[in-house]
Length: 75
Image 1 (tube, one colour):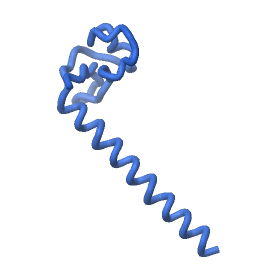
Image 2 (cartoon, rainbow, N blue to C red; image 1 turned 120 degrees about the horizontal axis):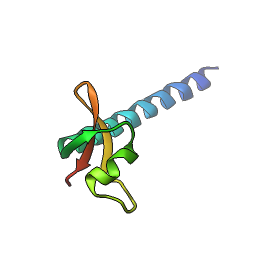
Image 3 (cartoon, helix red, strand yellow; image 1 turned 135 degrees about the vertical axis):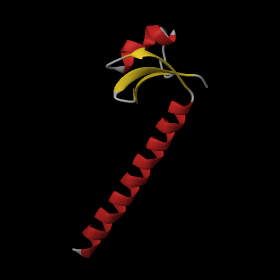
């Protein structure tokens, strides 16, 4: 029984590390944002950011104050 507890604790540690790394990546992206108007989902930002062709990875719908704004990633 203690082995399963150890696996569970290890899984929790790995999951928390992955979540924190992803959070850091998102915060880094938000620092390089050009906010261009309101949005509800990522697809709303493609035209605003001028990325109408795949891979669409330089436009996100990000929290900005009390609303969500299109974030056109500058890097």
